[in-house]
Length: 242
Image 1 (cartoon, rainbow, N blue to C red):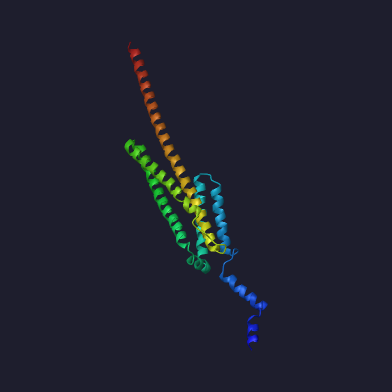
Image 2 (tube, one colour; image 1 turned 180 degrees about the horizontal axis):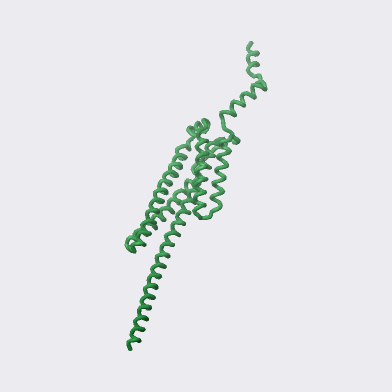
């Protein structure tokens, strides 16, 4: 009886049993052709394509923010997969991935705060120009330049996040790999957005300075012309009296 028992457990599975076993695995484990993974990869490529073709215009920056939003929506869908959640929870790299994501959240919080400050600076500069308040104008411009420097620092602060060198992923950790690619693509695109806004802000402040100087020169020239005209009238009046 013992030989028959040993022989019984060594029998290969039937073709139908093998097929059913493989089918169950394909449902529980997302493969590279899974629709959510395919969509996430497409969004990563779209963001990378946007970053690789810089234009520096406001429309280009808005398009980049839209692409980043689509990428994060695809990532959110991907993270809902049970296998993705299981893999991430068991990974030793989870804490570092979370730190990178928190760094992105923190950077965008500062970015939005700086945008509001720039709006306020622009409003104050325009008001100072109308009132010809040189003190207020100088103060607003100094704050404007300070925010520009902070925007540059925000971009520099994401360099480490964009590289993700700290992660060592095995060949079977596809879930970790694609999350890492998403963070990297987001970081590079965010650096481009921050740098683009900083450049536009610098151009705007420079334009205001040039415009202010031009208006000042125009006012001086207008005043001088008026004085010359008045002087000519006075001379003509004197000539008539003589």
